[in-house]
Amino acid sequence: MQTLLEVLQKTEAYFAKAGLERPKADAQWLFAHVLGCRRLDLFLQYDRPMTDEHLERLRPLVRRRAQDREPMQYVVGSTEFYGLTLKVDRRALIPRPETEELVDLLVQRYGDAPPERVVDLGTGTGAIALALAQAWPNAQVLAIDSSRDALALAKENATALGLERVGFRHGSWLEPLRGPVDLIVSNPPYLTAEEMQTAEAEVAQHEPHSALASGADGLDDLRVIIAGVPQWLKPGGLLVLETGIAQHETLRELVEAAGLQGFESVPDLSGRDRFVLARQA
Ligand code: GLN
Image 1 (cartoon, rainbow, N blue to C red):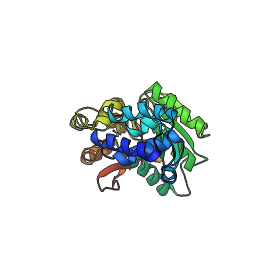
Image 2: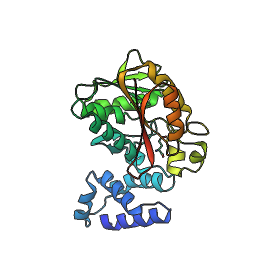
Image 3: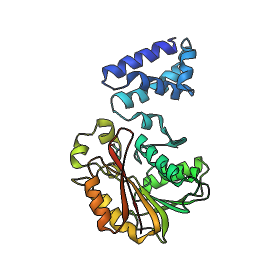
Image 4: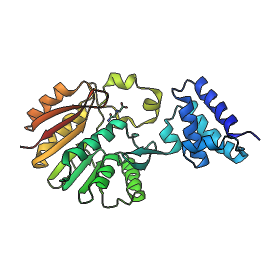
């Protein structure tokens, strides 16, 4: 029987040959998933024999990663987001580290005075809504998505995390709203047509385009959101958006044209324009 180390090394070599960017990390991640342990624990059991059952479970997953170029998070079916374990699959975009920065920005800004009514537009996996609900136990959080598939996934995540107090509504952007809120947050699709064409296979072939692409300049959905926000924000209420990296000049104009105040452009950790904040007068 082959040992864990032998099969791990073969898988890593296969991943490298297939052109994956992080063959070692991906192989370790996959093995930890199949063996039901942490990545760190693999090093302590290198001599462990790999059973036929293990190999049979590994094989299709290795193929999905190397040949089909499925993102690791879809292959193992989960990801970490701001301390939460979220189920992820093709129904929604895989939450990115930038979006964790967005949540952290909000948690820091509000400090010990969190908003009462919060809405997350285009919730996808539910990442932002669930992380904010976890951080703010007394907030009423509503998650909206135009994809029923994404909403079903987000609800599964809410149930698994014991965050059933988060509400869910189906519809396009602000359309399902019925009353004013203190905070509107969104990570809408914002990639330009060109960025979409040059996106890596993992993204372009597996993640939902409706969560990524937004017209030629990537601003189609941001335009709709910004125009609709003033109707639903309470006085002093905040709009916080994740955006593309070359959109802030235009976004400032859109935000000001909508009558919102205090436009702020905040960079992500790699220094690129990424978040937009604005306030209702
Ligand atoms: N940041 C994502 C990417 O580059 C895009 C997410 C989005 O459009 N909201 O793949």
